[in-house]
Structures are given as structure tokens and as C-alpha cells.
Amino acid sequence: MSLLDVTGLAVRSQSGPLVRDVSFSLQPGERLGVIGESGSGKSLTSLAVTGLLPDSLVASGSVLLDGHQVVGARDSELRPLRGPVAQIVFQEPLTALDPLMRVGRQIAEPLRRHLGLRGAELRSAVAAALDEVSLAEPRIARAYPHELSGGQRQRVAIAIALAARPQLLIADEPTTALDVTVQDAVLTLVERLVAERGMALLFISHDLAVVSRMVDRIVVLREGLVVEEGAVAQVLRNPVEPYTRMLVDSARALDAFLDAKEAGA
Image 1: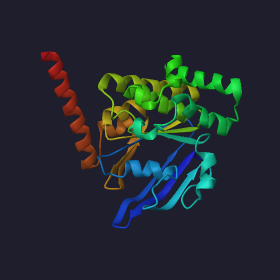
Image 2 (image 1 turned 135 degrees about the horizontal axis):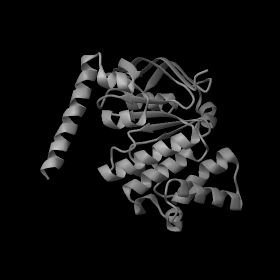
Image 3 (image 1 turned 45 degrees about the vertical axis):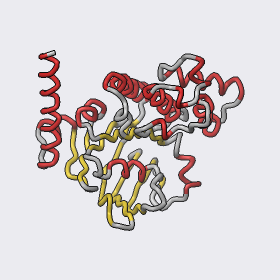
Image 4 (image 1 turned 180 degrees about the vertical axis):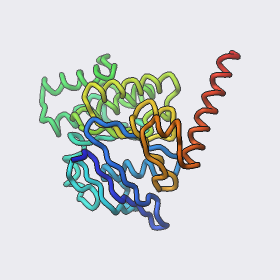
């Protein structure tokens, strides 16, 4: 059985459809990318998968997460799945993290709730979680989110997401707000942790170069519809749809521009 099985997923607002008939599956340990321009429905898809859509939006179709139906389920039914089964890392950690809670307490929360840790064992697990994302300094656990850099905040968000040992990590544009150097470090961190833990990865991005680095298979969304799906090498070398070809050509043009700029520097 698939870890994640999405069939005919649709998301609607009062003004009309935003995601239409999206279907894909994800096996344990597999890495899948969802790519598209802003407004293509990729982030809404990730929210629908975890049952985190705002009340103003309505999902239909089927989303089976580890055999549990997400669409139409009550939040009380989904809460036990968020952590041990699937967890999400959002684009902007400053808004995703609680600004009034110290970082250590935020990491401790899923460890306490899902793993039942307490006391010295809990403190040790928090320290280990920070060490795993290369934030071993004691001051980090005592800091508030606004006291950390953007890269440090995103590492904290990753530590929180991984605290309950999820089978699936959903990364929704996790490096868009970071500069190039920090972006590379965070991507390397995610690659390492996914490989070490044998997790499945659902990576959401508008950046084809980043997605192709992180995943084995790609789903291309345009205006809420899947227009192409396939292995990374297949999609990059032989895109079938004009929209996908445009994304690939744009990525190649950007690479050529940056290469030329570096050569002239």
C-alpha cells in the first residue's frame, strides 16, 4: 500500500476551483516533487494532503495518508497523523514558528505529545534534535525565533517537523526566503536527514533546478491541473507538454546566464 495516495483531489473556494483532479501516489522512502508557477495549486495540494486547508476552502476527492482518509476527516482524527506519519515544513519559518515561545519548548512539544518524553529524557531529545540540524549551541534552545537568522529558523522548523519521526516529510518551498548559500546548506541538510531516516519526501517548489536535485519523480501543475508527470531525467530531457518545456527552457536560460556572469566576474 502507498504511504500517500491522492486520487481526484479538488480544492474549491467560493469563487471557483483552485485545484482540479490531481492524482499521484508516494511510496515509503520515495521522493516526489510538485512543481509549478505561483498560483498553480501546489501549496494548496500540500495543505490538502495534511488536512490543513483554511475553512474557506473545500476539498473533495480522496487523500489516503498511511491508509487514513484525510478528505472530510475531523481535525481530531488527523491530529495523531501529524507528526508520526507526516509533517510539513513551510516556506517562511518566522510565521510558522510561535513568536512567543522559546525554540526549545517548540521542539519539545511534539516529543512530549507523540513520544511521551518527560524530564531529563525530553531535554536530552531536544538537544539531540538541535544537534541533528547543526544547531548544537545551548543558546539556540533558549532563543525566541526573532533572535535567530533565517537559516537558523528554518533549521529549527525542520527539527520540529522531524521530532516525532515522521514517515513523510512535506517541504513546501522551504528555501525560497533564504539566500543562495543558506539555501544550499538547508537543502543539503534535508537530503541527508531524508536519506538517513529513510523517509518519503514530498517537495513543493517553483524552482525546477532545486526540485530536480531533491527528488526522483516530478509532478507538474498548471492552474490546478497535473499536466505532466515522470522521472526527473525524463521530464528534464524530454518534456512533453509545452508548459513543462517552458519551465525547463527557463531553468536552462537562467543557468546559462549565471554561468556567463560568473565567467565574466
